[in-house]
Image 1 (cartoon, one colour):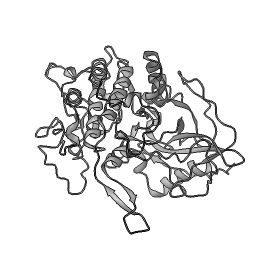
Image 2 (cartoon, helix red, strand yellow):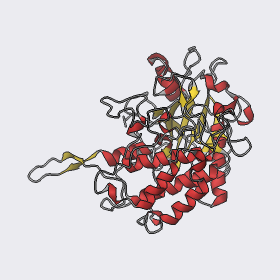
Image 3 (cartoon, helix red, strand yellow):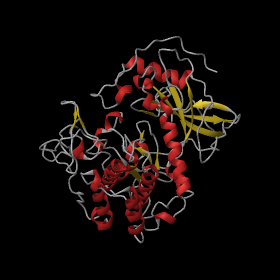
Image 4 (cartoon, one colour):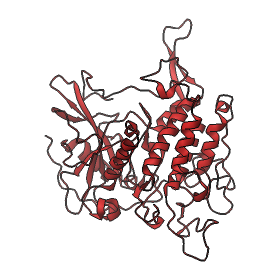
Length: 458
């Protein structure tokens, strides 16, 4: 077991709205490095002491030596997020054969949101994190609606306190199953990838950049149905909060995970006062979520069906999820991890979008995304039925949007004959199959893999 690090006090972390990496990215380099080293090198893996898994029941863990998975740099975690860092642990036997693997998510020590009762079940700070309850409750709802559909959600395996924590640095860990990749990686692979090609007369293969390849329509229908099923399971209970593509794993099935900013809808009519909704992904915000930080007011105060003489009502509902699903589908259709017209807040270099075309909900801005922008023959092959359903999700007025139940019914009805066999396919497609995705499916931490060399840079 690694020896604990010496005491190191860190001031409570405050969110930085100007930093796109959120709270963890707002920390100084020294503090970030200390947190990473403490998590990936000094912490000895222990199984989660608590769990609320409904469908699968308590998970069993392999007995052996648990090691942090190596990355391109010795102490770099797999991912960082708004509230913490994520890494993979693998269990190996005496022959260095992988027996098990688990993803562990740790919050930033001293993060201010730890003391927010809305982040905890029954408002009990230090109990079960709301993220754990919501993930497992949705999996249970999917299972009860149709056995097998629980596969579309990553269950939370459990939670527990961190070792070496001091009273002024509260934090906790969440445990998840290992997932292969996410939607941005999949989009990036379709949009820009390369392969080694052996040219005539040359012994060595050369790397050639492949041209953009839109997703097969069958894949988009499968993704759409998975999102619609999750939306139905969340109806009247939960809204996403931060539905950016990083929270969606793609293989072997579309799977929703990371409910850190999700909230339960405990108010009458299945709505939540938006003043208690917590952080959210601005580039995927529905009109009723958008907050103007300059005026410190919600951008859309009233829709046409509300009395402007009355205070804004509770507006977040299952229809909020539908808008966000529509944006995710449009990202997949256009092969953009984030829509170009939503990036005006933190503009990339040479941002080409004029204000009147940028998507926002303030005066002079466009409240709808641009056209589907199907600029090439391969993209134009998408059916009118698919594009029409995406547009129904992106209706400005939440009351006029399609409901989760209606969306699922229409997706399942209109995908018949258009999924190209994606729904009945099993296993991986051959390299020359028209439905094969470009994203690499190499499992670096495959159970049974031998030998596993933890010192080798992956």
